Image (cartoon, rainbow over all chains, first blue to last red; front, top):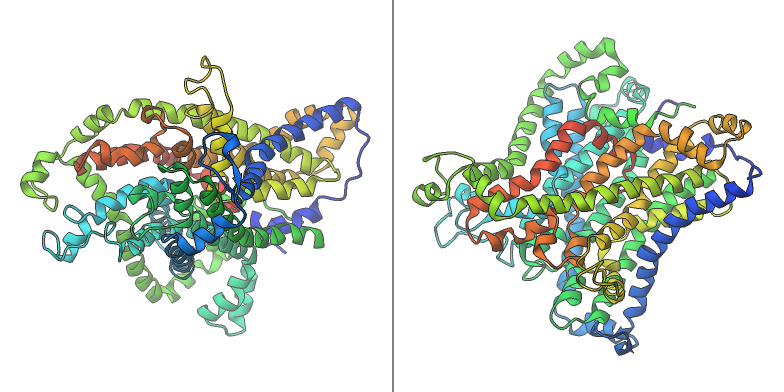
Length: 316
Length: 318
């Protein structure tokens, strides 16, 4: 088999690395190794996993963030408050779902389509690739600013192109709470599609060309060949794209924060977490409850990915 | 067993694209093109339209940035009258304090990337070249950590840093908030997982004989790592280094959370203040935005191959 993107190679790495027997390490080697493992593990524990557990702990307390002695147990109060008395919560959930659906149904397929088209020997393929890829280089915060200039009510290009600029019908695309989530999703797609494109281009290069030829000899047309043969053969890339799409929609934050800090139609769970941490009346408990909700949802794609990336290793 | 050299597999995504599928059947390239000539015509129209849509926001930003405010006020934003010059860039640079902001970005990005590559390569070496009990468990923990949304850890990290008292000689806030150390530490912790995962896969694909020979010569673990494995990982390190420079330069959230003084923010997070700073002078905002984009674009142009290789190498990144 000559399918050999690094992505598909991952599964076979386990085979490639033979079960090495533990060699007798000198005591000096053991010290060196434990330092090599210890420092990164300590950093990872102290700055990632312990804070994650602390978020869970804080979500069951009431705290204004001032003195540590002010932390009071609160049971599930914060969760009750968030789900019943906190107006932005359900809109935020809806927006996160919408973000996921939009990326999954529009941005990701668009990236795949661009990759498939550019994978043919067409003229200027590299130029097109560079154009679609450019937004991936930019920070999401900057993307928010760039699209703000495009969406502006009075000076933005979009309203001019629509012919509404300067008239009362002019829409404030980022300011109007009935449309701004869609405007933000377009800006997010601008980046996401290029990202997906570049990953699929690598994936397509890794598909064994004899597979396509065999399908064509069997009389499959281009569409059939793609969906029945090429796409399934890119399984490792597909897994990664699914995970990236889900995680990106849960992590979505920068764009909406730059626009209006995630308020007025642009509520997202991640933005609500931050609003509760840094606002005037710091409500750490409520912010933590929101963070835990985000964590629990995130564990779904994370577990899915880990089971694919590591589970297969063990099988193999 | 033909495990592609990861960088080779990644690179065609961009640099070797024209040779793309043609390499699989070099002889039939011409005929395939003729056969599909018609379809390519439609493809081109689609791609040109898409490319135009893709370029519009950027071109509009550059266009706005190049025009003096006086001209846009007089002729309107949607006109080509008046002069075009770089005055907005000069003014935005000075007024926005970009020299300082860029320096802040350097102070955060350079140490972070060095620490990430160092720690991640040590960890990757230990889990991939030495067989011991918990290596897979630790690797899973590292990989999972990188996939968490940063906001999940925001509150505890913020409070930890705030309650960690430090001498004022070290930090003028008396704690870790408002220091670069806080951002560097968290950036490092957050990115180690991803880089460890990618580097460990790379190191697993290197032949075990390499270090066996060294063992026979009596080389210790550190020499195996530093003198033998690391030099062989140069392509992967270059790819990860490039990728991480961009990731950390583009990071918005951690400085936003930890750094309160506006003049200590890195460029990317300071973008948030552009609108307040330049009020509704969109020409200046546009110029400021483009200035921010320049470093990422330069790195992309110079190190495109490494960047794309890095992305495809370790596409576990969310």
